[in-house]
Image (cartoon, rainbow, N blue to C red):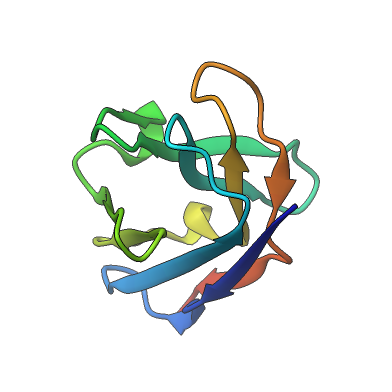
Length: 118
């Protein structure tokens, strides 16, 4: 079992920044990937960004150049720095964990709301 604890999120004006954190604990594999998905109202959940233990990153086209994912392997924690936020970034953001980076997520966080509005 793996437990994911998210923090961050909230309300921010367009053009602002937020940082999300997600800490994993439990049975952690060295081959894992962690990251974030999001679900906006009326839309399907989509991958935002993901990072392997080796530092390989994947980003959705819509966030490239604005969001940066990073991780601290010693703490099993992943961070998502979100800059130049837009109203269309409004969604519930879910941390994910995959035992094997090439497979779909095995575990999910509880979700944290990000609202971009003036």
